[in-house]
Each structure stands twice: as C-alpha cells, then as structure tokens.
Length: 486
Ligand code: NAI
Ligand code: MG
Image (cartoon, rainbow, N blue to C red; front, side, top):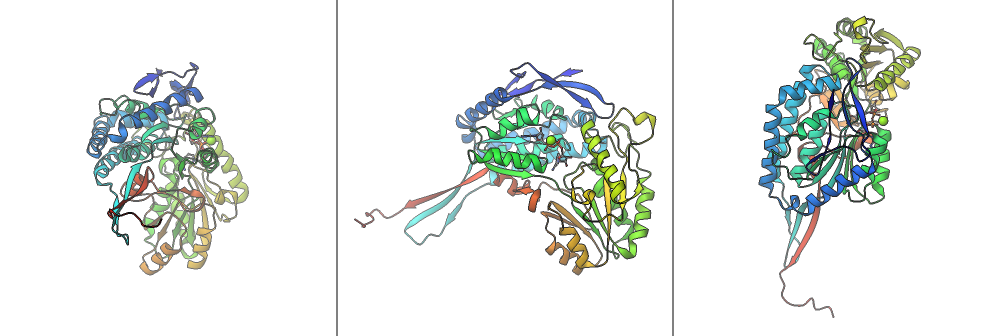
C-alpha cells in the first residue's frame, strides 16, 4: 500500500494534523493507498503559496513560456500514459480502454491550452474622442479548483490547463475517492517547469478541505465540478469575498429518439449515452425518450444488448463496465434501483450482479426501467450510475416538453434522419450541449457547461480560459490640453 503526500509550494507535505485517509480500489473494496487528510491550516498554506507564486512571478511569465510549460505537461502525460491509465482504472474502477481515452484527452487538453496561451489578447475600441481605448485581459489571480471522481485526471486537466494558460495560479483538490493520478502527475510538475506554488494539490474531504478552500479570502476564483448541493455551498462560500465562480453540476439529460432515426445507431447510442463510465457521467443520457412507433422494438433491442454487458475489473480487457467508484455511490445507485422498481417497470438489471467474483467490489447491474413517468424520482434526480429511464412520447411537441421538463440543462441529444425536425429540436432544447445523432463526444475546442441548474460558466475552448481572466479598460487620452471644465 502506497503512502502519498500532498504537493504544496513545490514540496511534498503531510497534513499538518498528521492524519491520513485510505484510498480504495473499487473493484476489490480494498485500500490501495493513503493520502493526507488536509484541513484548514493546510489549505491556508497552499493558498498563501499560490498567492505568493502569482504576485512574485507567474503573473509576469510570458505567454510563450506558459505555453511551453503546458506543452511539457502534455508530453509528460503521453510518456506516462500507460502508468497513468492503469492507476486511473485501479482507483476509479473504469475499464482500462476508457482510462486510455481519458489520458489521451488530458494530454490534448494541455496541448490545446498551451497553444491558446499565445493567442489570448485584448481589444481596441473606437471611442468618440481623441483617445486610445483598450480592453486588456488579465489573469484573475489565485484559483481554487474542486473536482469530482468520475474523470479524475481529466477533470484536473480541464481545470489546471486553462488556469495556467490565463496566467493564474491554483490550489486544486481532487475528490477524496480518487486523488492518485493527479498526485502522480504532480511528481512531474517541477521538471515541466512549473514554478513552486503555481500548482498546489491538496488532498482531503469536502467539509474539511473543500469548504475552507472555497471560502479562503485570498482566493479570487472558484471552479467546481460536482453535485448541485455542494455547488450551491461553494457559491455561498464565494459570496463573502465576491470570488468569481464557475460550476459544472451534472444533469438528467434527455436522449431523444424519433421513429425515423437509424435504428441500429439508436440502440447503441442510447446504451452508450448512459452506460459509458458506469453511468458516472455528468452528461449521461439517463432519460431515454423514444417515439411510440419504435418504443417496443427499441426497448427489446436495448435489453438484448444490455444483458451482455460484461462487468468486471477494469484491468480485464473483456470488461465493458467496471464497479462504481465507492461503497457510498453503490448504495446510492441501489437506493434508486429500489425506488425505480416501485415507480416503473424493470426491463433489465435492478440490483447487484449475482456473480460471486463481483461481491467484494462496488458493482451494480446496468439497469433499464421503462414506462417511466417524467415526474418519477428516477426521471428527475441525478443517479450517477448505470440506470436508464425509458420514457415514451408521441410527437415532437411532447418530446420537447418532456426533454425540457427538468431542473437541469447540461446536455441533450436528438436522433432523427429528418434534418428539419432535428434542428427545430436543437433550437428549443434548454441545454448547454446538444448532440445530433450521437451522445457524449467531447472536444477541448468546444464549450462545455450547463443551462439552468446544471451550472454557471463554460469550460474548454477559449470560453474555458475566459473564466480565469478579467477585463481591464484602459483609456489613454491624446489631448494635451486641460479638460476645460473648471
Ligand atoms: P460532491 O459534490 O460532494 O463532491 C465533489 C467534490 O466536491 C469532491 O472533491 C468533494 O470533496 C468536494 N466537496 C464536497 N463537499 C464540499 C463542500 N462542502 N465544500 C467544498 N467542496 C466540497 O459529490 P459526491 O458526494 O461525491 O457525489 C454525490 C452526487 O453528486 C453524485 O451521485 C452525482 O449525482 C453528483 N456528482 C456530479 C458530478 C458531475 O460531474 N457533475 C461529479 C460527482 C458527483
Ligand atoms: Mg458529497
């Protein structure tokens, strides 16, 4: 069992209290490492380091050099890809092939923001005066970044890359369930040319480490991905010193299938939309809306395929679905499986797998409920596990009404061969990301974030960097004479 330390001010540190916590392998239910259990004094030390690093150097480092740092990070991730992917699978449970995709996306994210660093610029305005009017973009300062456990290293990259690109420093807290890949990457920070204090990694729990980080007066910006409940708490904590806030809070995204969709693609797309990454996906297509003429046929085809999804250790190449991340998450999914059985009909799954080999890990069956009312709890609340709710609809108007009848608005997908219908839906869906004839592809070039209660702000692309910048208006008077007012 490995003992990890935190990375604060360029040094490896235990918690000031000396306390640690166990990090689990969800496939076996056994501890695989320990990490420091940080609290307010550790957070304070890290934030002060980030402040110092910002004021005393990083803010003046050229964009070219910041870009080079990010390119070196990308190169390092590619070199260590195999090791990082295996560790990600061991710690999060996801199948290795998915970890490999994630690690590649991590490198791509660092490359993208490495390139963007030299393309951030201000503007010149045409003001009606003898003057030059500028809008400069400046880094916000110190960022606090709190991330979840579903894509541990990728969520870290989505946060660290735009912050460094923009010239901010950061204190990042991985989820207590999955701190390991980020701590492994932190070993390379110095060699990549990241100065002391520019990126600090704090490990610990939400209440004891996350809350003081979100509330710290020396933090200028908080970026959070996770539950709505904690998102609100983060926003309240940020209000005290009016920190800038960006939140990505998941959803209950509709995956909408019209009768004229390509049938085979539809079946695959519905399963992929909600079962990939064990359903632990913020944009999971957990509400599958199917038009009545294909409802029965599509349900049968999905059941057929869902039954064959192979559960197992993520390291086994035959595995299509790993365990969920933690015992708590397994129990949460089980709770919703029980609720679903009362609210709707079970097509497949509905509990834990019977296989004796899967009893110790946090495995749950891929589950499909059908004839689900959109008012049911399983259609309204984010489950964050492999649970699909299938809901029938008659026409376009009903599909749209059901799709938008949710407090969330992260993502949506529409499947149809009729481009007019698909685009009418695209225009009316209340979601920050809308896919047509696909669900889940995510690109660092494209904006990511939610409408309604799915969040505030956008990650990725230039929008992601914008969240770490503020605009300074500069007015340069070219008249040498006095104003002449007095
Ligand atoms: P969570 O929102 O509690 O945890 C996410 C991160 O926030 C972790 O790093 C955690 O340590 C931190 N955190 C927790 N409480 C905090 C506080 N008071 N102040 C500051 N930071 C805090 O999510 P949890 O409990 O792990 O999962 C519960 C549900 O949340 C899931 O079932 C899912 O529905 C949703 N969720 C959504 C995610 C998304 O990608 N949008 C990711 C993870 C969870
Ligand atoms: Mg929580």
